[in-house]
Amino acid sequence: MAKDYRNTSGLRHFTSDQDREQARINGAKGGRKSGETKRRRKAFAEAFEVLLAKGFVDRNGNEITGIEALVAKIYQEAMDGDMTAAKFIRDSVGESPVQRVETVEISQETYENVRRMLEDA
Image 1 (tube, one colour):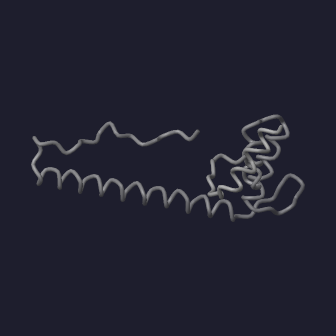
Image 2 (image 1 turned 180 degrees about the vertical axis):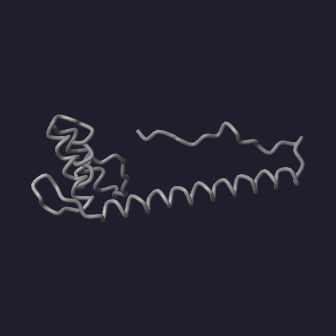
C-alpha cells in the first residue's frame, strides 16, 4: 500500500469566522506553494532522466546506460533474495497480480445456466 506523504497539518479550512478575502489570500498561498512543489518535482525528474541516459562503463569494460546499470542492480538484489526487488521486477514486466474487481453484465439466461451448474455440482 502506498504511503500518504501529503502534509495537511498547516492547512486551514474555510470557516465562518474567516472572511472571504482572507480565504482568497490563503488559497493563493496554497496555489503558490503547490506550484513550487511541482517545479521542484519536475527538476528532480529531469535530473534522473539525465543520469539514466548517461553512459557508464561497467566492471567488465562494457559501456551501459544508467537505466541498464539500475536494472542490473535491481536484478542482482532480487537474486540475492530481496523480495521487494523481485516484486518490483515482476510488476515492471507486467506480471503483477490483478488488484481490482471487474463487474460485467450478464443475461438472465446465462445467470440461470450458471446457477443450475452450481446446484448440480
